Length: 172
Image 1 (tube, helix red, strand yellow):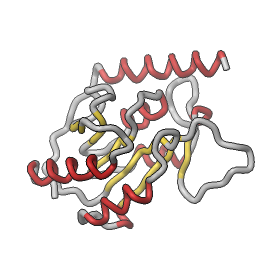
Image 2: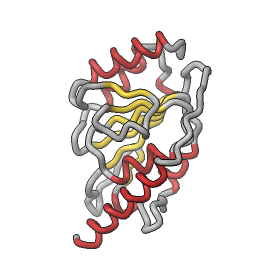
Image 3: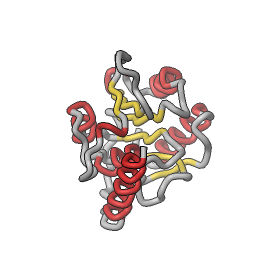
Image 4: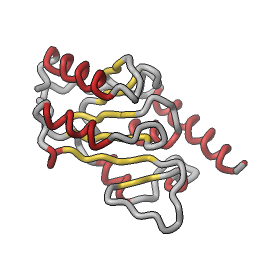
């Protein structure tokens, strides 16, 4: 318990230090491939969010998501990629192949769908090679290119605002 708190603090410190050196890349490409990071402890309706993305013109085969869980039970299995605090080592890198594959994937759009700062979520967003990152205003402003002011439970408002501004930015 105590070591996990220290590890969490250390990881956040490393992420904050990396954020001071962030260089935003301007991308004029349209959005075809989407990655989504969920925090399952606050948001359970990932299928409905993906359904809203499909309704707005994103093909379901071009959507990839990664789910964060605080704890995973010993015999619990998932049909999607899950990561926890245990997947982070003390150097603020990931041991999981699935997480590293997600980070290294060049998404046209990365949706950081969490509104509470947790070190593993911040780290995945920070390390991601995505061209355009979208998240909530309650998260560090340096992490995302575009932020939407709502909470995670209002996924319809989030998607409506996201696609409204993506059309304005000529990303669709």
